[in-house]
Each structure stands twice: as C-alpha cells, then as structure tokens.
Image (cartoon, rainbow, N blue to C red; front, top):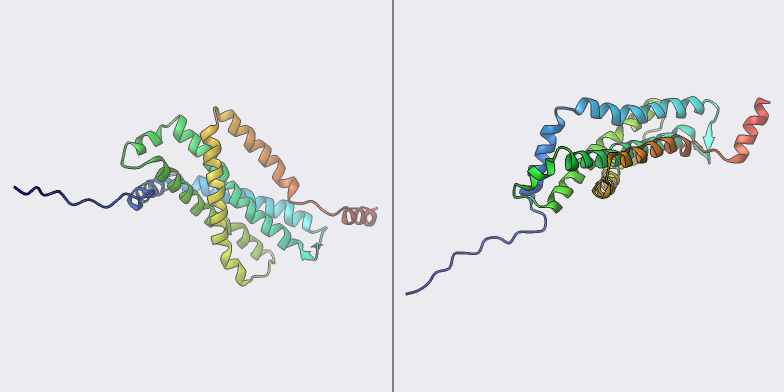
Length: 213
C-alpha cells in the first residue's frame, strides 16, 4: 500500500507580508481616532520654530556661509520635524503599548512575531515622518525659499531618516525601565534643538554687535 505525503507548504520568510499588512492596517485604523492631535504636535511645533527663531532672527541675518538664511533655517526645521515625528513617538508610543496598554501582547497572540511587529511599527512611524517633514518646507516656500527639483526627494529622505529614528526610539523604549527616563530624554532634546540650529560664526556675531553699538 502506497503512502502519500501531503504537499509541503510554502516556507515562511523572516518577514511575512500578511503580518506586516495586518499591523499596518491596525495602526491606520487606530491613527484615525487621534490624527488631529498628533498632526498638530508634529507639524506646528517645528513650524513655530521656523517662524519665531528663523524669520524673527532672520531679519538681522541675511546670509549664513553664502546661503540665504531661509535656506539655512528651512532645511534644519525639516530635519527637526522628522526627528519630532519619529524618535519621540517611537519611544513613548512603544513604551506605553508595551508596559501599560499591553497592546503588543494582543498582537503577538495573532500569527505575528516580534520582528514583524517592530518592522511594521517602524514603517508606520517612518511614513508619518515622511509626510510631516514636508510641512516646514512648504511653510519655508511661502516665506521665500526658492523651489528646486531636489525638493521632490524630501519625502523619501524623510522616510528613510524617520525609519532610522523610529528603530532607535523603539530600541530605547525596549531598554527603558520607567517613563520618567523617556521624559528626561525629551526635555533634554527640546532644550538643545533651538540652540543648536541657530549658531552663528563668531565674526558675524561680533560684526552685528559693532553695528548695533
């Protein structure tokens, strides 16, 4: 009597598309309930920096290293928007879902493993960062930034940078023991960004002081 063996199924890969899609769809559905507040905090804060620190101080400074001041500040604010919309949401969101809401426990009960969960979370945060990073650039265009074809690459670059910052934030949240550590990191980052973005050469600062004196 011949014994027939059932056909072997397809070998599972390291990252399965259905698992990634399921996590991403869940994130999109969940995001639809709080997108207004998240969009406001991720785009308005860098835009305020752009308006206040950039164009307020820009009335005293015309060029930095041969570049118009709006180019100097606009590009820095785009990078800040990507940072704020990727690293911080990854650190806080991951920590809250992991420690308090136990969201990841429920997701891992489905046919989703840890690698797929982390990858989908980072992809989702990077997608948001790629979109939010374009807002300060549009504001800078309204204030005189010359448009260029290279600006079309900003969403892609912001996505890649957001993915890297998201992976960094998720890894930090995985090692954090309390939410106070996360708050301390955020306060230090917020206090550093406005200062490090608007450093002038010593010669220029001295010339400004002489002119005003």
